[in-house]
Image 1 (spheres, rainbow, N blue to C red):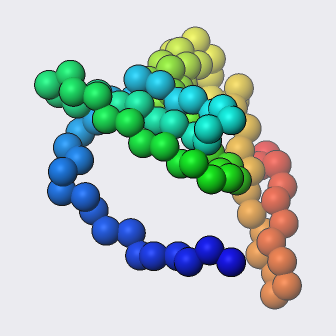
Image 2: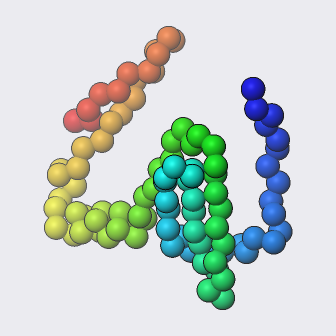
Length: 94
């Protein structure tokens, strides 16, 4: 079993980075960033990465803004939760 260590911030890494590439290949998961001065910072996770998620927040917010502008609120649906002692159920809100 591998040894886990507590993560601590590396003060040499700039506070603000901009993702340039996310590469998942035989070498592992590689993240390539640039900072405000166009310096490149590459991080390689060279073991098995069980899962990761990538979301383009700018596109997501523009899509939501478009939907709110062109459709009324009845267009949207949401899930409400019902709690019990043993589990939680989800139902469509009416």
